[in-house]
Image 1 (cartoon, rainbow, N blue to C red):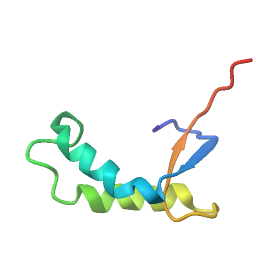
Image 2: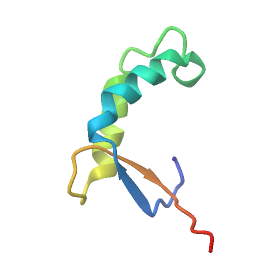
Image 3: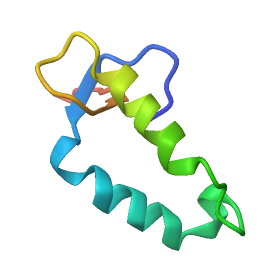
Image 4: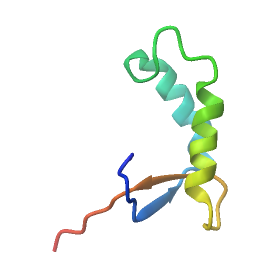
Length: 67
């Protein structure tokens, strides 16, 4: 996640709220106290990652295949 040139987008639509709740448990990831607009910004990133896909919310990665 966060690679400048992702080549794979995973559909996280069904799990988005769970991901937000999990991040909120890890203050090292999002600050203490929790950044007030964290969920909104995270949703915006997920919507942007899903552009051009057939799902609403995505998470982009650079996937390497090992043969």
